[in-house]
Amino acid sequence: MANDKMDIETAEANLKAMAHSEQHYFNSYNHHGIHEEMLKDEVRTRSYMNAIVQNPHIFKDKVVLDVGCGTAILSMFAAKAGAKHVIGVDMSTIIFKAREIVECNGLSDKITLIQGKMEEIELPFPKVDIIISEWMGYFLLYESMLDTVLYARDRYLNPDGLIFPDKATIFLCGIEDGDYKDEKIGFWDNVYGFDYTPLKATALCEPLVDTVEMKAAVTDPTAVLTLDLYKCTVEDLAFSVPFKITARRDDFIHALVAWFDIDFTACHKTIRFSTGPHTKYTHWKQTVFYLKDVLTVQQGEEVECNMLVKPNEKNRRDLDIKIDYKFDAQDALRKAEGTCEFKMC
Image 1 (cartoon, rainbow, N blue to C red):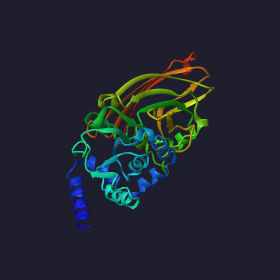
Image 2 (cartoon, rainbow, N blue to C red; image 1 turned 135 degrees about the horizontal axis):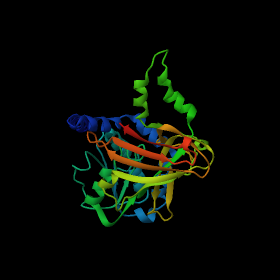
Image 3 (cartoon, helix red, strand yellow; image 1 turned 120 degrees about the vertical axis):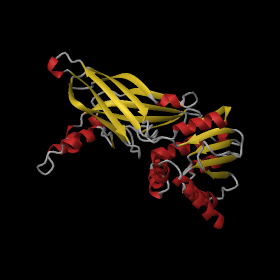
Image 4 (cartoon, rainbow, N blue to C red; image 1 turned 90 degrees about the vertical axis):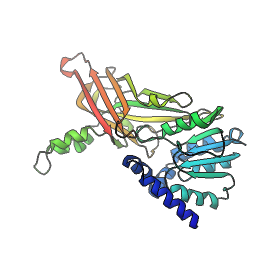
């Protein structure tokens, strides 16, 4: 018990020595509430469970690395699936509770949990057969751990090794959201009789993470980014992509909404889950980007867009996002084009 206390104190001291942005990120995962939310997210947790536990022929006698293991739920799934040994790595001090959880479940001989940064620690095995990780953030890439997973892939994964999950796709569509936009953005026009429009500009620059109803979707969805975790690089996490959205009906477009799908293609039968408005709730919800203009679209009309996404220069876990849109309607009064810049921080 005394050694555990010393380990925790050392870990906390190491965290305090990190840059403030990194401290904030890792400290947020020290609180049990965030883990409760993730564990209770059945879409997320059951998808991982099914991908791992239903494929014992893939995991049997394999060495498995769990990147950002948190409370070790994925590590325990892998052990249950017959892994030879599982190494879980996490920088946050929740890992000390995870060790207790692993011991409570009689898996201490199968699972080794290491506290530290993936990029700085040494694993007890020179190579691993499988990497598992729940690395996704809001809008897939905000505060995500994907760069750490890619480091682990390049450093430790056997040439024929597997990654769970191994594919991620971001989708976008246009939505009618006038009432909510008025509530969130129009509110600043008159705050108890005062003009608060300086804060309106700030509100427009911050994407909104919330649930969107499927009936709000005005356009067909379009994929703007697909990541193959066997091939992608850290450089791919900054991207610029043109895309078009096509109106399903006559309506207004107030915003673009984004979500992502995740695939486990290494399974005997591919397992997929989505975080979109068309499916069950997940803790990632959706990400809403309000446009400066209200677009008045008719069925079949297209809006041309371009999305630029890159990590913030001061804090790589934050995102700078720019969306250009151009709606070239036949009716000159409905034409619109503009540029919106957003910060996820």
